[in-house]
Amino acid sequence: MSPTPLPAESLGLEFADAGLESRVRAGLEAVEQVLRDASQSEAPFVTAAAQNVMFVGGKRFRPLLVLMAAEFGPDPAAVEVVKAAAVVELTHVATLHHDDVMDEAALRRGSATANARWDNSIAILSGDWLFARASDLVADLGPEAVRIQARTFGRLVEGQIRETLGVGEGQDPLKHYLSVISDKTGSLFATSVLFGARFAGASEEIQQALQTFAEEIGMAFQLADDILDIASESDQSGKTPGTDLREGVPTLPVLIFRAQADPENPTDARLLELLDSDLSDDARLAETLDLLRAHPSFRQAEDDVRRRAADARKLLSTLPEGPARATLDALCDLVVTRSV
Figure 1 (cartoon, rainbow, N blue to C red):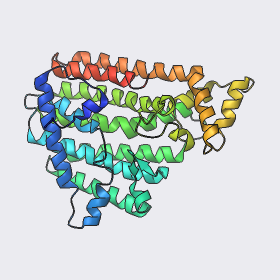
Figure 2: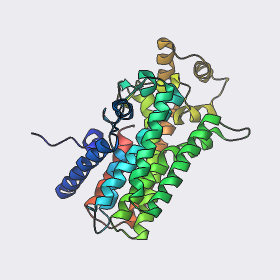
Figure 3: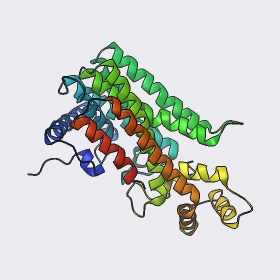
Figure 4: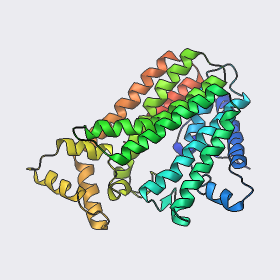
């Protein structure tokens, strides 16, 4: 029987060392069992709702970061590391339930969302229940872990609130968007590596270095998804290309385009018209995608992802050399190649 596929394999990430891969594989298998146990309820319906998107192809990227960060401490196999990895994934999946309600999404990872399968109330409550399960697990990790989780949760919610409210008067739309994804994506990436390094016994300096790296690579990862939504010809991003455009979700390429669009230019004028229109029509969406892909703003968005990945790589220079650092270095390349 072949080994269980790793999230890293589905991402295309190669480990720098066979021993490291073996440890991470074992850790992820342990995390998977904790997730199954934590998402079980005495009420079968609650279990079904809570597990609706948990086991349908998620890449477990955040637990992977927890386990990779733990490699920088003297005790990467500490039992708290696996529990912390489950905490961040439960938190992430809970936010997906809530995001799907906010976005009125019908599909997630190719499967019906909880709000589509049942209704918004069930989706919201199942997300809340998963947050409760994450809180129950993190309580076993001590008061400081509870504090870190609470502050992370606060950033996640603030980011969602600011995204919902939209850009304020006089506020730069691109800066607003970047601050939102810093809270909604970067915060949990940063907490993932902090938990891993902390519970493996890494020094404060290493914990801080990993947090700074993870926040930056998390931003790059999310912005790469923005590009995939436009560039991919298939379901490479886990959703149908152009989904964000259809839903009117602001993304990096569109925001860069709007900031520099020239209404006097026929191509820009047409693209502005399309972006402000109803893109539920397949032909209009296809035209919008073609124009965006060909526009210089799209190249600028790709360059921004490259720059952020390069900045993240520079942050790794303060970490001890070895297979773990080399694998995180490879992750920086992966973020770029998956999108550009």
